[in-house]
Length: 149
Image (tube, rainbow, N blue to C red; front, side, top):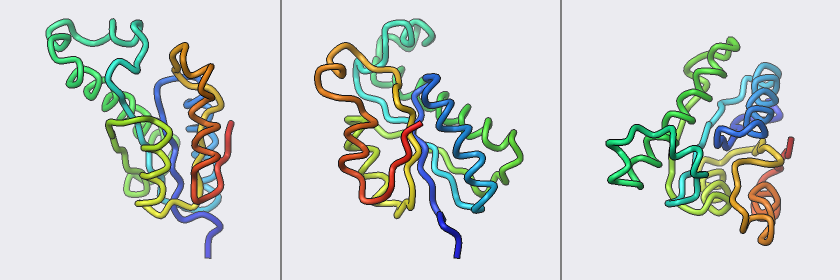
C-alpha cells in the first residue's frame, strides 16, 4: 500500500503554489498517487494585477472572469504536472468558488485526500496578513497531513 493515494495541491498562480506543484510532482513519482489540482476563487480575492490579465469584455461579469482566470490557472498547473511525465489519468483539475482555506479543507475531506501540499505564501490581499495565511488555516483545519513548502 502506498504512503499517499490522493494528494491535493491548491494553486493560485503564485510562486509558492509553483513550489508546491514541483514538490507534488516528485511525490507522485514516488507513490503513484492521484493528484488533485484545486484553484479556489473568491469574488474580489484576486489582485487587481491579476484581473488586468482578464479579457476586457469579461469584466462586466466579475465572477465569470474570476472563474475563467481560476480555470486557466488550474488547467495550466495540471498540464505542467503532465509535462513532467505524470500520467494524464493520475491528474485532475478542479475550480471552486468560496473562501480559500475552508474550501481547500472541505475538498480534501470530500475527496479523501491523504496529503495536502500548499505553498507557504500565495496571492493574498492585505487583510490576510492580519487574519493569518491560508496555509496556516488549512494546516489547522485539515483532516490529513499538510506539507507547507
